[in-house]
Amino acid sequence: MLVGRQLLKNIFSSWAGFGLRVGITFFFTPFITGILGEARYGAWVVVFATLDYLSMADIGMKQSLVRFISKALGEKRMDKVNGILNTATAIYLGLAAIAMVFALIIIANLGSLIDIPDPALLQETKDTLQVITFEMVVFFLLLPFANTLGAFHRFDISNAQNMVAETVRVIVLVILLKAGYGLVALVWAIFVISLLRQIWSIITLKRLHPEVKLQAKSLDRSIAKDLLGYSKISFLITIMWLVIFRADAYILGGLITVAAAGIYAPAGQIFYYIRNLINAVGTPLVPAISHLESTGDTKALAHIYLKGLKYVSFVTSIFATGCLFYAHDFMRLWLAPEYAPAADVMIVLAIPAVIFMPQIVGNSIMFGLSRHKNLLYVLIAEGIMKIVLSIILVDKMGMIGLAYGTGIPQVILYGLVYPQVIKRIVGLPVSRIYLTFLKSAILGGITAAPIAALMIYLIPPAGWLYFFTHVTVILLAASGVGYLLLESDDKVRLIDLIKSRGSTQS
Image (cartoon, rainbow, N blue to C red; front, side):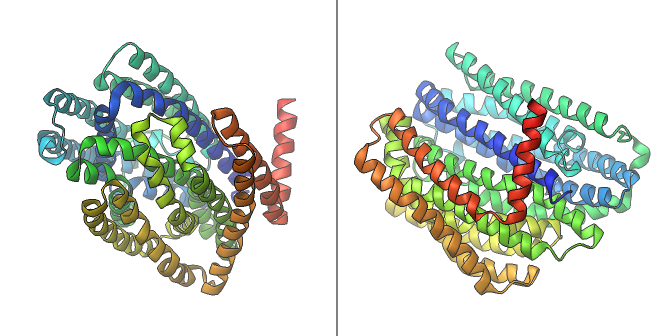
């Protein structure tokens, strides 16, 4: 069940959520960049990059909760689930205090970290960060009970709630921006909507599992030791992920200007969302793999990895091909002319993405088996290489140097080192990993490239109607080829899921 129909429901609900976020980003980004301008939008990017860094105070507890709750469910130990939730809540009390202290230090020294020449904008950014800090503290305190539906294998419900919250959030932000409100009002609105979303999640968890309770008697020192023992590696992984994926605003804001961070951000955001698309497969796999381990069924791991590698390599290859052909047209249609350099950033990041993103499936297997220390070593190397290369290349090449500083380590590490790591964990020959990747990636490329080239020749994408006509034709062709790529058991599950949804709606 967990690696079958429910897992498929979780993945498809995650993809639905991803589709909504892409739609929101597509329409909202030109709107907010047009109203805020380069510098103010750059400050907005810095605020949320700072929030991501402050979230390091989580020390990897979210991953630890997913691991141990799903394992306890596999053992049918609801008493242990209660112990995990309540013990984690006590731990988060301390983590929230630590996060607040670090936030206050960053706010006090923001002017020396980021080049924000306008004193009024600097003060507005600081005020916005104060609200964000309060939101983060509340989030930490509610997290164990409000953000663990996925650990209970109900990513479908969690994703549906997120979709509702995101829709409401963007509507409110549009209203506030049109009314002329500033950054502080925007983050207050985000806080209120997020709080209501968390309360909704807690109510849902209690309805699904009435035996879940907030109670001091469930606190358990041995559980705390297990949670923190697992989370210390996850914490270091979180740090490295933030260095790799969220250092861009600080590198550009510190070495160039905050406006450069604002121009770079849309391209980086697109790849962040594509990564979330792949996480729609990888995240639900973590509790499923932990469950398989608790029942002793670990033989399927190599098969799960190869299937994930095959499917994700095909999808990311389609996306990367689209970037190579359409990046400049897309940015020209999407944003104001001053954001045109973001198209070159997209092109530079596209090829490394094909190599890096399919390995998110391998990451999930490592987390599910508590073998994530291996991932940490890879990320440390990637983080060091990215920072060193980015600083050198930004000085020589400007904004595009950051894209090269990000992509080069991905090609080296995920193309050469990572397959060796996976070989030790799931027992697959490296040659089979490469062959699976290359077959799917090449298939994706030769599916999309000829169609894109022909469409551009016949109907240049001069406007959105033509652009989306191109995208639709490519996606239809990719869907047909992708269905043929599916293994027989996945075809059966997909057809059954579609039929069940159709019968439910009727």
